[in-house]
Length: 185
Image 1 (cartoon, rainbow, N blue to C red):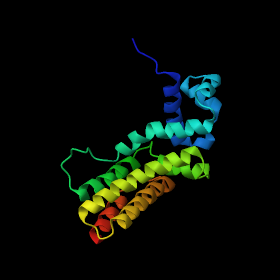
Image 2: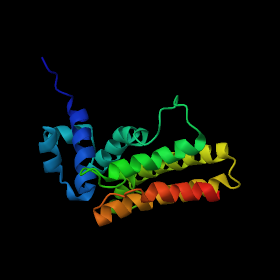
Image 3: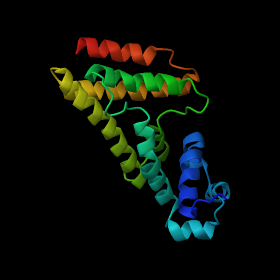
């Protein structure tokens, strides 16, 4: 016997998948509801607006995305290796057909509105990545850990955009660039 997920969960899962693959503005409410197997009436009982669905889909599914880039907290790795792990995962992801870049950057760019509720959620996740880099840059003893963390975040975002724009895997480019940044720092 299989159980069917509740409507809210189905909506958020469908939203996360569709918005990532096609862009939040491109996916209409009717298509979202049809994919989720939920009526529009039910969606609007659960969420006041599509904007609320966009924000909640990021909030709900974002932690899994972020965790997929970080090594296990218990892994016996140096700070340098923990940073490089993020770029190695980005390299792996960029070589899959389902890679469409960073869902947080994509959402912020697509919405063109820093006051949109989803833009704030997206920024929060990008700040988590930068905080991760900052923590490990401090552990490395970098002379300016905040600057290094900002550089690494920019490299991550730029590498993801490059892979999407060129429709080709990174083929080691992001990992080599991160390695060089760490060597200089």
